[in-house]
Image (cartoon, rainbow, N blue to C red):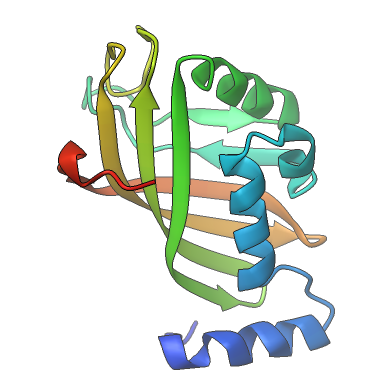
Length: 164
């Protein structure tokens, strides 16, 4: 059974993991988010295992549809390059927990659409639309790379609160 990790323990756990051969910690994850926010895709892809699987929550637009799953590096890269041709996406890390090869993060996310986008997971978006949400992400780590990622939606925020 996994134990709960409280904020005061995060740095201690990350330090213990680094000393046992692990290479992902909060600071490395923050660097990953910085690469993502700045669309340095070559750097972002270095964090993913070649056989990465990313599972997304069920679409808001169609709650009866199955959750989406993206497999492999190419599909992930293409998905984000396409999305980012229509919006600026910005992430910020909130709570963060690490236990061996399992990592969880609260990810505050903003989407600022500068171009209409008919294929957004929530439904069609128009230039000028802003979405602000918090998601929870769980990462399984293999060979110091993200092998399996699960993204689930927690809550929406008022677009007027956008700050990134």
